[in-house]
Amino acid sequence: MRLGIDLDGVVADFNTGWIRLYNEQFDAHLTRDMVRTWNGLLDISHFETMGEFWRWAEQGEAPSMFRHLDTFPGAVESLATLARDHDIVIITTKPDWAVHDTLAWLSDNRVPTNEIHITTEKWRVSCDVYLDDSPEQVETIHRMRPDRVMCRFIRPWNTPIEGTLDVDDWPDFLAIVEGLVTSG
Ligand SMILES: [Mg+2]
Image (cartoon, rainbow, N blue to C red):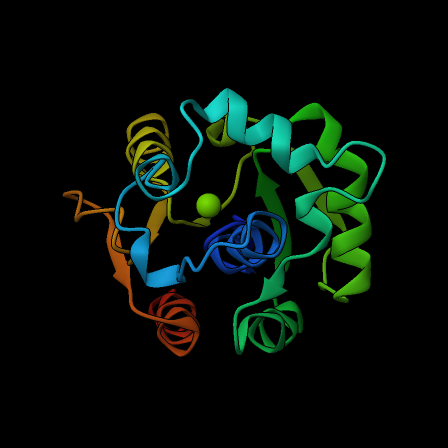
C-alpha cells in the first residue's frame, strides 16, 4: 500500500523544536504541553501573527527551525518496519524557504522514503492510507478521498472526525496498517 505520512506533529516534534529555539533566544520558559490548539503558539509566545512566527522560524542565514526538530520516539523505527512491505510517501506542508532544510532533515534522520511531496493540497497525492494531525487536512483529505483510509494522529489540537480512524501512537498505526493488510 501507499502510506501518505505527514511530518510535523507526526514524525517531527515541531513544538519541542520551536520551543527549545525560542527559549534559548528569548530567555523564556515555555514547555511543549502549553500548546493546546492549532496555531496555539500565538497564545504562549510574544508573536502577534503566524507570519511573524514564520519570519522568526526562518532564522536568517542560519539553518531554519525545521533543521532542529527531533523525531518522536518510535516514529522512524515504525516507518522502517512499514517500509518493508509498503511505500512511505511523505506529504508535508512547508514554507518555500524550508524546502531544503526539510530534505536535509529527512536525510539526517534516515527517514525511509523514495517519495516526498511538499504541498498544501495533500489530498492530490493518491495514497491508500493517510496519517496527519492537522484538523484541516484530516477533514479535507477525508472529504476529497472518501474511499481511502484517513488516520488522525490524536493531538490536543485536533478532534474526532466521522469516518476517520483515531491513532494513539505509532504502535497503534502499525496495528491499523496490519489490520488493513489481513482484511484485504
Ligand atoms: Mg502535521
